Length: 611
Image (cartoon, rainbow, N blue to C red):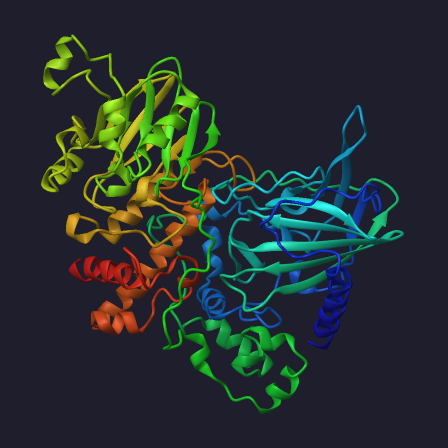
């Protein structure tokens, strides 16, 4: 503990000395690089292995969260974490997030990328052998991507030279951990790092700000020494496989609040009070020594407090300028953001294929954005559900389009107004629900299906609409562009809130979990558990398999907690008072608005109790 405090103080001194020339604001545009570089980072670097040994080798013990300023949500997340979760297929190839990667066991290599004509520094690359963590630190003054852009293990980094240091700012990180015992780092974490070289020695200081799981910034330092010659780097050709046979697809290992046996084992082994090893800002301060001497065991720290519900601390990925923004996804598939719901557009030598139409509040701007991608009319619209954020623009986009493939054919006899506007596709229950809501006929799907899937081949790609019974509603569909390998989920998956399980219209928590697992049955990662199949959520940033599996885990874990309470005879009010979502509320929670934490808990309770 004393060594940790001393090291943290040294790191704070380094950061304080640079603060006068570097404001910590990772969301803004990266500053232009200094005219003259401070030093060359190129070479082969190895970490000093005796520093912070718990971050290397076998890793830390379950229950050791001291020295990390985690808040209540972070503490409860760590306490419920079961390492067996790593045996799940979709977690076996998880990578390291950048701040942990820099402290992990293994050698590293750094090199520069320069313009071949002007020799201007474009980027500095850093490769860590463990999990093949390759970072690109852009030095050419480019801005950080928008909030709806994809996240990665290494994030998006920009750098500049400040005095004798390289300052690096990083955003767009995936969810990961601060320690490999389940201490979580959220996908909202941002980094400010300083690389300071002293000959063949390199000191790396990182300040992690995480509004979801930290009470205050976490500051750590790592020392490296330069090797004079090349060294061997391990590769990480990870491939997942079955490690536990016969496990149900909705089985996600976790511990109920207050029931993690290894935490009790750790406490007994080292004769510590709970306050001494469960983390939090006080565990970083020198006063913790005197606190421990007088501390009594407070087991209430292992359960949610009875205070007010926490709300999401995540930044909104929705643009606030009133415009429709276009994000290329892959090939001829694009994501449109700005109408309070993500819209997907596929273009090609045939008409435009649109998945969902947003709320319709900015339908004219949506059409204008589509015209920048293609001069062909909107031919098909696919609705992933009947909800307003999926179908609000149906009437406007249908009216502006045309489906010439059914005009004047025998097939068109089964369609009302065939060929006059775009053809709207959906599950039959979408049409039923929109009819019941008395939506205009022009907003209703006319090309419907009843079971399993609706398939078509359009713009050189096979497209499948896959019905997901009783997920968010009773008419949800996934849309899979098979050649582009892009899955559009509608509100089944979002990065912004708990799933909107509409019990009145057929939604269930079991159906939601099955639908999330259906997505995971179709995803394939490219490397390190990221990339590969891209997933467009109903709301939020462009994702891949990792974001879906973390979301699936969250829904299953909350379901399991509520199910245990129901089996114990708890009423709905008692379930809400137990705060079964406490470790996720700072990421997804809401106490006001159209979908609150209480509404989500009630939906899970009602469908679980009914079963």
